[in-house]
Image: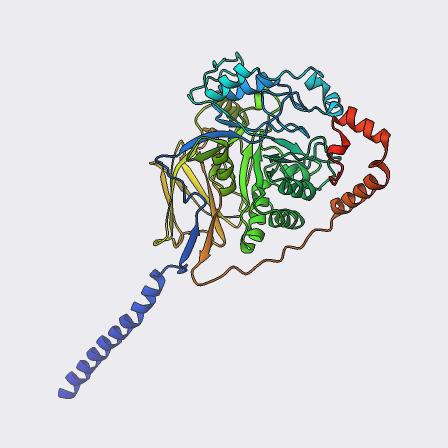
Length: 507
């Protein structure tokens, strides 16, 4: 009898011990499951770190636009008035091959270019603003004149800054547009371009003490304008290598690239290209900034896209410094972009509705504050007019979050991120689906892992067709054209410049 009870007792004890052992074994497993998937400690390089969001001003900026001085429809007066009415604070006039001397001075013209585009320019005389008119726009005392078709009215009380010496470089290239914009230096007047040669003008601007941005590179990548067929796909590695090398070679002067211009018809793949470029430049210590611009040639396109620059003081020196540091956000009313995982930037984007918002100068999504908490590895974004925020790293969408109170936070250690952050993170904000009032892109925030260094990436110099074309053109120029009086006369009357002013340029 005792043996039977003893047997039962030992079975109970054994069962209890087994359960205890199972529970003790399960506890570490549970703890392991609850630990973060990404336990790295990040050092977050924030380009907006110096911005005082409470005291600095945010200024609507146009970095790329045209008049009848090259191939636009707008006279200088119409051009200035339209930007004034659409609440611009800073405007860069970047006519093709034509350096802006100021809205109150007539630029040196390129007769051949204006003749080719005579349906736009009408070959009319260029009449700059009078000194009184110029002062009124600069001081903010000019009247705001509504257009019947595009009824914008200025609400900003300050005047506009006239960015000095803006120009669209490479002027005209065969096969496809290969353009970039330059500022703050005397380089490029009347100089034609060579297909695919961004390197020569970028170097020229740097040596002249200016800054530059690449323009709508999608028109070069997809020369037959078939970017729609490639949306949401990686770009052939040749292109990110070529442009990454350019940014590395001209760091501090070639500041970055446009990622969305005009109606985004030909730049819809440029954000993916930008992400691929960043993966090659960041490990080598250079961060190119991204911008958006209208590339306007008429009234209809003046407000397509722009940037918003944060500045301590409203003057030209501070503006250049803000561009160099990446202290601006890039905004467009249009987005045809699709991420690598098939997610559209703006679900249900409707260009017709975007047109309506643009003409009405409707409020776009805009960031009003960005806070980085280094201790917790979080990035917090505050802003207006947005309902969604999309976080991107290395071309991958980390997450898209719905926002209800104008504030969103990314924790780099969240378990539900679709990919692990690496090298950098950037974001863009959009409004509710169907509203179509635009998109706002941030600059990339570089992610350094504590205790680790970036492994440099090999970015070879590209010995491509444009490189050899440039060598050929340079050789022909020096052996045949440089010392030819007939060519001197042609350049003077057709291209509008004295060859002796540019005698040693590589054009």
